Length: 241
Image (tube, rainbow, N blue to C red):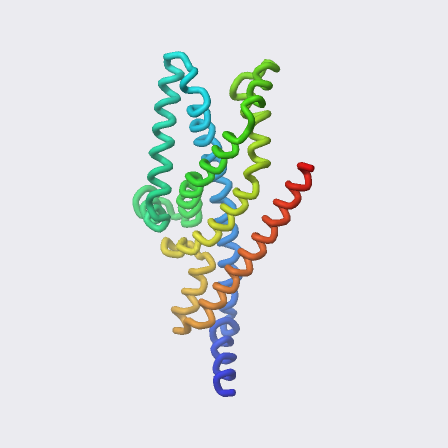
């Protein structure tokens, strides 16, 4: 039983001595806050990008030549570049560029993390929302226009609410993916769950308990949110009956 006694002693050194478990608890809160705020930012930017892209797909060929068509073409080109860059480069590189170059003067590490992960998430959320918008029957848009609504009002009051209902499970899954991606935030000083474990490793020179503990916590959080997504999907299906 010497191995068991040794594991218990290492557990005490890793978490009990000097209340080092607080690094883990604090890290959980930072990870969840960073994930939530990043997803909110991603959804806001994603809606704008999806609106521009879907408007281009639906309206561009039928629009008359003019300033509106030109601006839409430029906006669509910008959005495509945005999607290509943020989906084609590693999130680790993006957060380093934002922290050490773009926002180098900022001392708010959490804000830098939110901006980095929010911009990255927006690229994926935009395509999710665009897919939801394009899945709505064109008759819904025509119905809105026949009621006297302009294009923006039709999108806001008729198309987007229906699209969000269809894409809500996909957005929830994006939240789960983002939750795991934020584990690299510690490289720029955000005291998230992974950095909390690394702090304990640096103090105790132990790796087993800190790393396996955060692995178990990440797994538990992912399983919990996956369960919530499953319930959400079933509820949405039942509401359609």
